[in-house]
Length: 557
Image (cartoon, rainbow, N blue to C red):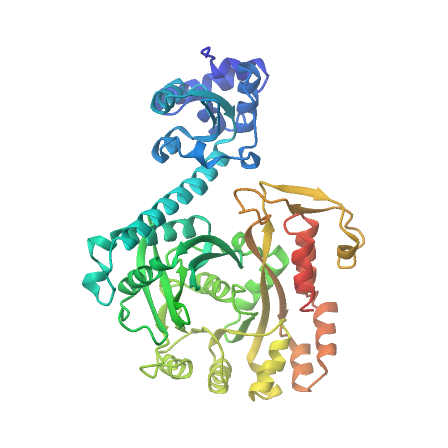
C-alpha cells in the first residue's frame, strides 16, 4: 500500500489548511506516540468521519458502518483481543482464504503486517469509525470469552463426579473453569449494561438471561450439569450456605469487572429443577450526573431544585419498582450534601456509597426496620433524612412528624403518577390536613428506552400509533436492530418525570378533600405540570424514543 501523508490528503480535500496542519505537526513533536490524524481530530480541525472518507477515496478502500455489517464470529476470532484493541481492528468476514478486517487507521502499516503474519491470510481492508470498532470488539470478544469458558466448564464438570457441598470442593482446581465462567458472565453482563443476570434451571438446560434496559434477553444456554457448581461458586462469593438448597438465600459480594469495583446483590431460590440465582449490579462508586443522565428537561430540573431548597417538608419520588426512584434520591442527596447539614438515611439495601451522608441499612433479622431506623435518626440531630421506601403507616407517620418539626425528608412511594401519592398516603391513614402541611413536592418517574443510535431510522407512524401522537408529529424514529443493541432497536434508558410543587392552593385543595380531578387540573393548568405522557411525547418528537415506549406510558394515564 502506498504511503499517503494524512495531512496532505486532508489538505487536498480542503478539510484543513496549512496553518492547521502546522499546528498539528507541532503538537505531534510534543507527543510522538499520537498519530497525526488523531491530533487533528482532537484539535477540532476535522472529524473522524472526514478523515476516514478522505482516506477511503485516496486509497480506494470501502468505508462502512461496521455496526450494520453482518460480522462473522469466525473472522473475529482470527485476531487476538489484545491486538484488536491495540490496533483498533476487528475481523468481519472470511472468504477464500482472505480475512476482511475493519480498521480506523489504514496507514498503520505495522498493524496490517502484524495481523497478516499472525493469521497467515491475505487481508482485505474496510474503513470504519474507531468507536464503532471498539464497541464491536467489546461485544464480540466478551461473547467469545463466555463461550470458551462455558465449553471448558462443561468439559470439566463432566469429567468429575464431585457433589459440591462445602467450600473446599467449590474452590477445588477441578471446578476452576466454573470460576472463569462466572467471571465471563459478570464481564459480559457489565459490558452490555445489564442490571441483572438470571441463572434459571430447567429440566434439560440452564438458561442465562440478562436484563438490559428493563427487558430480559436470552444470552446463553448451559448444560444442566454446570448449574450446581455455578450456583456453588456464587454462594461462596456471597458467604451463603452451600449445603442448604431448600430455602431462599440472599447475599452480596464485591468483585472487579473491567477494572471497576462493583457490588453484586445475590438472591437464590429453590425451584423444581434446582436453584435459581439472580445477580444485580450495584454500581456503588459510580459518580452521578446531576442532570443529563436522568433526562430531566430544564423545566422539571428547575422545579426539582426548587423542591430541594425547602428547609423542611417531605418530597416523595413515586413510581413502580425499577423506575429509577432510588437513583433520583441519591441525585438529590448529592445536591444537598454540604458541610453545614447532617444527612442520614435508612435504606434497604444501600445501593450507592455517598460522601458526607450517614447511611444505615435495614436489617429485619436484627429488628432494624424502616420505622425503627427512622426513630433512631431523629435522635441524631438530622437536617435531612432519606427513607428508602415508605412501606407502612408507622414509617409514614414518623416521616410526617419529622417534616412538620423542621426536617427535610425524602422518600419513595409506589404510585402510578405524582398526585396519586396523596391518595396513597390517605389510604395508609395519614389525614388530609397532615398531608397538606407536610408534603412539599411530588415527583413521578418512569424509565423508558432510548432508540439505538447505531440502527436508528425514520418512518411515518402507523395508524395504530397515530392515535397516541400529537397531530404535529408526522415522522418518528425507531431502531431496526443491530449488534450493539442485541437486535432490540434500543440502547440505554432515560427518565421521564411528572412534578407537582405543593403550594398554598394545593394545600387548601388537599386539606379540604377536593376531588383528585380538581387537584390535577390545578397542577396542570396553573403550575404547568407536564404529565408522564407529555414528557414521553416530547422525547418522541425529539427522536430520542419510539412511539411504542410512549404507548406503554399511555396505559398508566
